[in-house]
Amino acid sequence: MKFSDIPAHDEVKRQLVAMVDNNRMPHALLLEGKSGIGKMMLARALAQYIHCTDRHDGDSCGVCPACLQHQSFNHIDTHYAYPVIKLKNRTGAAISDDWAEQWRQFLTDSPYMDMNTWVELLGNANAQPQIFVDESTALLHKLNFTSHAARFKVVLMWLPERMNEACANKLLKLLEEPHDDTLFILVSNEPAHILPTIYSRLQRVEVKRLDDATVAAYLEERYGVDPDAADGISHLAEGSILEALSRFSASDESKQFLDMFMSLMRLAYQKKVGALRRWSVDVADFGREKCCRFLEYCERLTGENYIYNLRDSRLVRLDNEESRFSANFARFINERNVERIRSLFIDARRDIAGNANAKIVLFDIAVSIILCLK
Image (cartoon, rainbow, N blue to C red; front, side):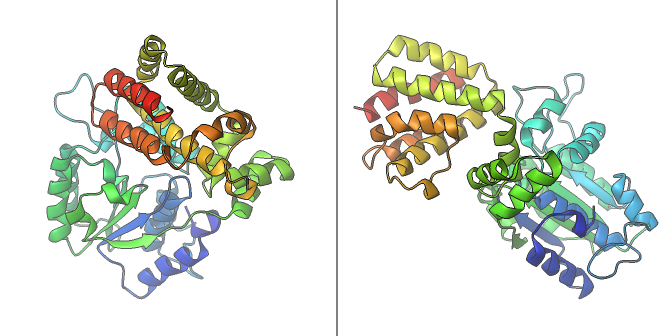
């Protein structure tokens, strides 16, 4: 992955290149920003630039042995760490190396790092991918060896916020006493969820959302989307390629989420408690990861319906189906209840992600919304 392969982010690219060229690369770097904007691609391009033997003009050459090894995910001094699930036929937690084949496929097929795609590759919709403590142990073992082909060993970690507490504490020791020949490059969508003692030891680079023109151009060039349609989708995507692709594909999941949200609000308004109990069971059957995505969708749509009341289309991020629903529903979301309803969804997502009983949490939301809509 070369920097030139990545759309936009010119300022961040210059900043990263300057760190390497001026020998000011920190031992632990964090690229933080919203999902779907290319942070992992930047991390991969940075690792390749560090190892390239003929870098020039602010980019790796792409043809030296180190670059070719990076492009095939086989560079001996580059190590990946990422969220995985436990294997049924193995005692103890899994580590990244157990899923190396799926990981290479994921990086190739989904360079903007779609978590939904990764969960599908892991093969268990009910599991919640984590970085387990065994990952830190494996990394420590690898990093105790000297680098083989380059000056630096590089660890690329995707989503450090998904480290469990034991893993985070063990990694902290690696960051407090770093090896001279080791660099950590971490990529986070939710840096606020990283262990504070780790976060304080990272040099952070904020990667900003993509502008609408970049997202539209990507849709036109890669998927042949009509320019007018691409402009409309990019306006709704809020700078995320993943969000744009989701809206472009008009996925069944998005339609399903809207249907379930509409059912929730309709049944809550009608105070049909029995039907809401069945609704909570149906949503819980999504599985933990999909259920969390649904709650995130509900929180966003609640906020958008509040904004819809301002009657300024430039501020609203709704597709056609959502807009038709909001035309009648938005008046029920106001200053009195908007924050309360959004908080319900945010808290429920946190609880379900933490292995709370989804049926109980969802039914509690449903009953609470009855009160919010009174």
